[in-house]
Length: 487
Length: 136
Image 1: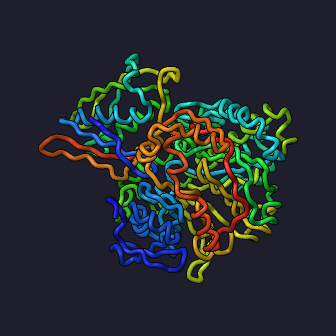
Image 2: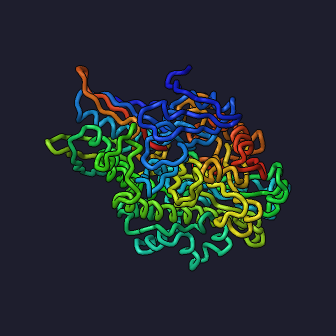
């Protein structure tokens, strides 16, 4: 066992699920359940992520189990890949750590009517243009500026606010989770500091694992669902991964500072300070929820503006409008969020706050919250992989409602720490290695590229196999990257 | 003296110092070393002053670093030299640096936040020791 490995019990439930019994630690209110196969569970044992799954089971009001998706890795407080649903009527809590600093970090996929052979001769020019046009990296501001009054409207309305500026369309809203708008948003709960951090960052990518990629549909597994989404083999798409930028980070930070003494006030014992929480029905809980939902609306605006800039770049390179290029939004999903949803557990249907910390909503066919166009096939679930191998489009299935509060995985999950990835790179030019595989990569820093190299991640295909087998979400299409823009 | 250490998705910062003041000063340098690779090239052209209240040593470190991060986030000011004085209610500090200049400064990580996970500040016979993890 490597140093720092998880030594607690992991009992096999079936081929793709493992249990940490609640008897493992005094204070656990429910079991922990980790979705993984034999190969992934071995990797998961290597760090303290499973311990974090057990710690989340301490949260008051938690229902069914503390859940983890197969891309689980060690986070702070919550593991990345964690899911926790709490019932407000059973003194359930809301935990900012269960949403994360990057509130409504998420992914969107944009299709086009271009195919690989159309784009290949222009690929370098296209990636260079995206790199020039889309602000990325530490400290780079965006070109969209909002004064405080406008920013508060944006926080209250989400991307619908951008309609007047012709930066969003009804089609875009229709293809965004929750239409890009959480009605619980209270912009006045967002601090001046958060507004200041967010004022110039809407429409910027950021750094770390955020990216914009040009991808090609590499294989189609579900023709009906792919057609419904407008996807076909060899079609060129754009995938965008970013969140609520400094505004969201500050909202989380503000809440955690206010929550320092809150668990004690309400008699909540926690094994990790980063799990700080407040009863949903308390003043503190409600204040955070209002601010968190506002930050989520900001994040949808950020990805909307990033998509707009991607469309601009395609227009520049291909000399046609984005409408002529049919660059329509397939779907936008959040993977760091808490949502108030109806679920059935133990035979009882109730509304719970579902924390998804590095996990994606995956509602099945016929669910009322799935846009009408996708109601026959299920909600699109967009899973970014790594910059060298693949990303995936899935659709939610009924197994997610039965097992995971309508949730599937969110990515590949890290296999190496950032430090280990840089050591592993040994000064190699990752961009040149990718170029040899036909992938043009542009990044603001060599180190950033080394930290995010394909080897630093688990194989996303293994993660998706588990989700597919467990019937949480099923495969629609696999995408391969051909152009990468990183901070 | 500071060093970074491994954490799967994020980065850890470890600081050792003979006094608490020095611990806080080195933590400031450690934070900015994550933001910019060539911190030694950041000139001291502008000064900012800080007052951070608090008696718990861990929260004082946390709040101090948060103030510095906010300075960078709101003003794009890179800070490289720090002077900290403690009193009974917290700290007074000055920090010096210059505005970020992409032509001269090699920017590295975007630090989203300082986290509470694994946050510790300890004093022993040798001096002061702190560890924290930042969200990247």
